[in-house]
Amino acid sequence: MAEAGTGSADSTAGAGRAAAPNGLADPPGAGASGDPAKKSSGRTGRNLPAAVGVGVALGAAVIVSLYTAKAAFLVVVLLAVGVGIHELVKALGEFGIRVPLPPLLAGMAAMTIGPFWGGTSFLVGAFGVTVMVLLAWRMFQGAEGFVRDATAAMFVAVYPALLAGFVPLLLAPDDGPDRVIVFVAVTVCSDIGGYFAGIFFGKHRMSPLISPKKTWEGFAGSTLACVVGGALLVHFLLQGEYWEGAVVGLAGVVCATLGDLVESVIKRDIGIKDMGTLLPGHGGAMDRLDSLLFTLVPVWLLLTLLVPVA
Image 1: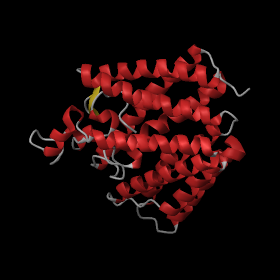
Image 2 (image 1 turned 180 degrees about the vertical axis):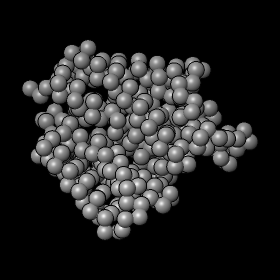
Image 3 (image 1 turned 120 degrees about the horizontal axis):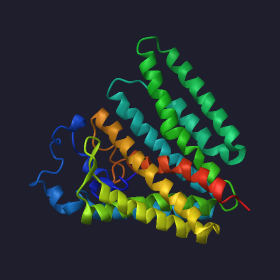
Image 4 (image 1 turned 90 degrees about the vertical axis):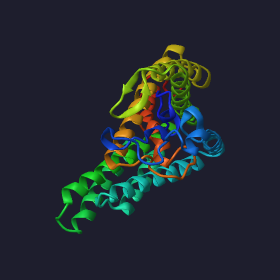
C-alpha cells in the first residue's frame, strides 16, 4: 500500500523508496535533479496523474464488486493477493530462494474464500494444511537449502496469504460490505492524510534507515485523518459510537504505518524499489496491499468486539 503517514512520495506510491539497500545512494534513475521523470512528478516524486487514475480505478472495482455480490469482491481480493504472492515469490527467487508457487496460491485461495462460510475454524485449518503441503513439497526437492526455502515459504503463507484470510471474515455478516468500506477507507485516510501533511509540513524523519521520506508530521496527518474518518464511518455506516470509530481509526493508522515500514524493510533487504510495475504510479500489487494487510486484522477484531452484528 502507499506509505501511509509519510507525507512524501513514499506515502502513496512507494516511489520515495528508491534508496538502495542499507541506506546507500539512490540507484540510477531514482530521481536525480536532472531526471525528466522527477521533473514531471514534482514534489511527490511519482507520476501523480497515473497514480490518481489507477487509484480511482481500483476504488471503483472495490465498490462495484462489493455492492454487486460478495462473491465478486472475493474474486477481486483473490486476484490481487495472488498477484502479490507471485511478485513476492519472484523477488525471493532472485536470491535463489525457492518458494513453491502452486501450493501457496492454492492455500491462499482456500484461506481467502473458505472462511466466508466456515469462519475462523476454516481459516485456521486451511492455514495448517497449507503449511504441511509447503513443507512436504519442498522436502521432495532435497535437503540443500531446505530450512531457508521452507522459512521463506512460511513467511509468504502468512504475509500476505493468511492475513488476507480475514477479508471473508469481515465480509460475511449482513453488513459486511459496510465493514469492508470502513476498513479500506480508514487505510486510505492514513494514506491521504499522511501524504498531504508530509508534503506541506514534513520535516522530522520518522525512520531514516527504513523509509527516509517518512516524517512525524506526515504520521500526525495520518492520525488525524484516520481518527476523524473512522469516527464518522463507524457512526454513519455501522451505527456505532463516535469513540468506537475513533479507536478503530487510531489502530488503523498505527498498523498501516507498520505495514508500510515492513514492506520497505523487505524491499531494502531484497534490493528493489517496487515489488512490480503492474500499477503505474504505484508499483506492484504488494505496494498497494502492504498497509491494507496490516490494517485488516485489528480493524476486523475491533469491529467484532465494539460494533457486533445486530
